Image (cartoon, rainbow, N blue to C red; front, side, top):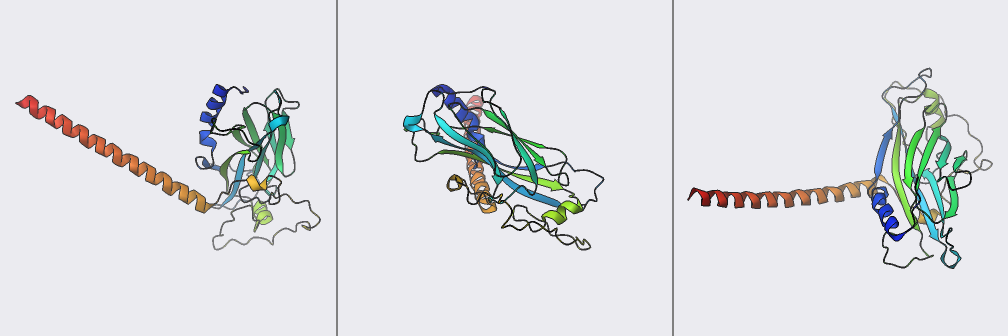
Amino acid sequence: MTMTNSSSSKKQAQDQLETSEPTLKSLKTKMTKSDEKQKKLKDIEISVPIVYGNVAFWLGKKASEYQSHKWSIYVRGATNEDISVVVKKVVFQLHSSFNNPTRVIEEPPFEVSEAGWGEFEIAITLHFHSDVCDKPLSLYHHLKLYPEDESGPLTMKKPVVVESYDEIVFPDPSESFLARVQNHPALTFPRLPSGYNLPAPMQVEDTGKKKRGDTKDHSLGQWFMSFSEADELLQLAAARQQVQAHIAKLRRQISLLEGQNQTIKTGSDL
C-alpha cells in the first residue's frame, strides 16, 4: 500500500476514487453455496444490502504534519439495520505504518476509527456465521480524506464522505439459516414457493437486554448517505438518459461523416 498526501497525489487518489462514489458504484455480489451437509432450500436467494466507506474530518488548527484528519472506516446495513445476524466479524487491513494494522472487529458496529494524513487502500474482509456461508467476502475501499474540489478551503463543519453499496446474495440457503433470520429487517427475505414449510422462527434475546447492533443512532449517522431501490432506479434512469444522448450524438457525427464522404465521392466521379 502507498500513502499519499501531496496535491498531485491527492488528485490522483481522487481520480481513482471516482468509481467509489455511491452514485457510480452499486454492486451485487453472489456468494458461493455454504456447507453442503446442511439441508438446502433450492431456488431461493437471501439478499443483504450493505454499505461500506469512510467519513473523514479535517482537524483544522489541531492538524499536524502527520495527523491532519480523524476518520472512520466501516461496514453497515444499507438501512442502518444490524447485520451481525449474518456477519460474524469484519477484518480491516490498514496501512502498514499503523500500529496493529490488522483490525479484527467481532461485534457491531463494524468500524475502525483512526487519525492520519494520507489516503490509501483498505482491504475489508467479511466473515459470516457458519450457517450462512463458509467463505469470506473481500471488499476494497480507498480511504478518502480530501474533498473533490481542491480549490475550495478545507472545513471542519462538513466531513468528506465516500460510501459504496453492495448487495450480498446467498443462493440456496440452509433451512436453519432461513429460519434464524426470517423477518429480520436487515435482509431481503424471499417469498417461499408453495410446499415450503419452515419451522417457527428461533427465539432471540430480549432486545432490551441485548446490545443494539444497528447504526440508526450512530454518532456519524447524520453523514451517512441514503441507499434505496428508488435511489438506484433514479440513478439508472439518469445513466440511461446519458447513454441515449451520447448515442444520438454519435449518430449525428456518423451521419455528418457519411455526408462528407458522399460529397468527396461525387467530386471524384466528376
